[in-house]
Image 1: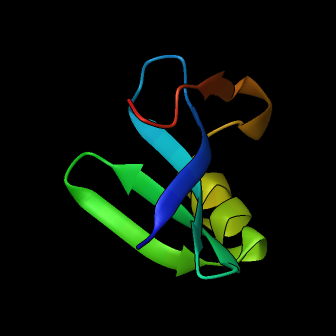
Image 2 (image 1 turned 60 degrees about the vertical axis):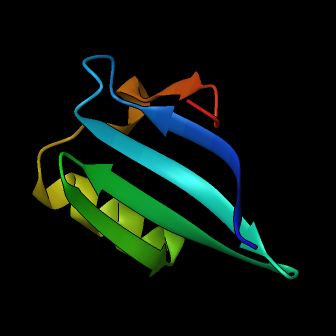
Image 3 (image 1 turned 30 degrees about the vertical axis):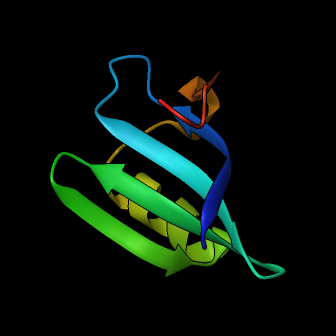
Length: 66
């Protein structure tokens, strides 16, 4: 079963990035509203956030279970 190991989000909570692990494999997930993009590489996460105008340095650590 997949488990969210850690997460960060924009201060307004509109964008969230999660690090997910399942059976020894890790990947990233981006959540924006109702849209969930799953099984991403870090390069894909960076591209998605950059294209959306999200400044990655503004992401803050949040409780992964939230």
